[in-house]
Image 1: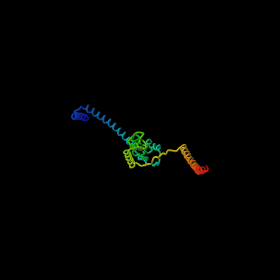
Image 2: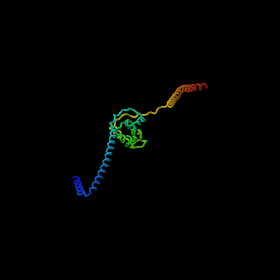
Image 3: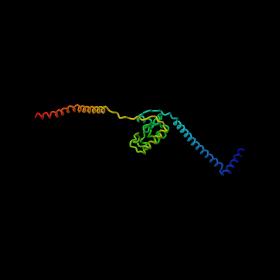
Image 4: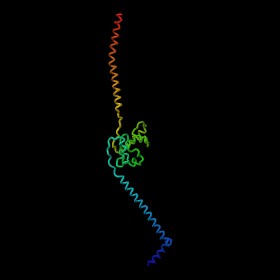
Length: 221
């Protein structure tokens, strides 16, 4: 019975495929091997993609609410440039600090605007410059078109991001030497004015007495 089935199968293989039974089973084995290899490759790729998606989801955890910082210095602002993932990502425009953590792909490390993070980049944004010298909040000397561009950036940040503070304005301290110099200069000025005031009345009567005595002297002569 089994022998008859085998003979029937061989005849069917030859009739329908035109191949000998040995060739048919060889081709079938090769196809199975190709399928096994392809399944292994795509299966590992899918696992890798799944692992990457899991890691990305872990990185994209819900952002904590923005923390109000108040007034901070430019040096303190540099701590929020994205290098520490536990800290918010901050950026300033015209002295106003905004939390741009939700756009970390743009302003975070490796992003196209990463060099603006942790700084007041007003001048660079106005000029659309990526030069180190323009990474400053000094907007003096900018033209009207550049100021308009900066205004557009400010409106965008105000509507999209939360303001969390402002940059503390630095004042030039007055040294003791300058203060003492100004005080001594003022004292010298007051002394001169006092001397002129004291000398003025003493000279005036003498002149008048001389003028009054001169006619008398003339008469006696």
